[in-house]
Image (tube, rainbow, N blue to C red; front, side):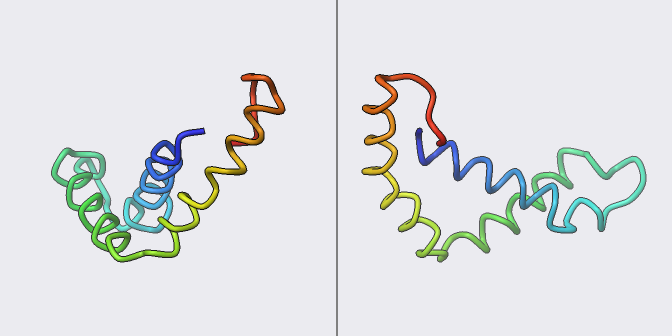
Length: 77
């Protein structure tokens, strides 16, 4: 339900899937330095993505509604 968890998943997916990791080759592909470099790229791209942050925040009423309907159980978020 936490929008921060969604943001973390978005960052993870972008680092792994948006060709960043695929551009790297060899043994250093998953090194600390490579991951840090790619993470910085993704975070700089997201820094001014106001639509993403607004969407995550504006989804909170729906998230809370679903939690209430599920009586604290699992939801789609």
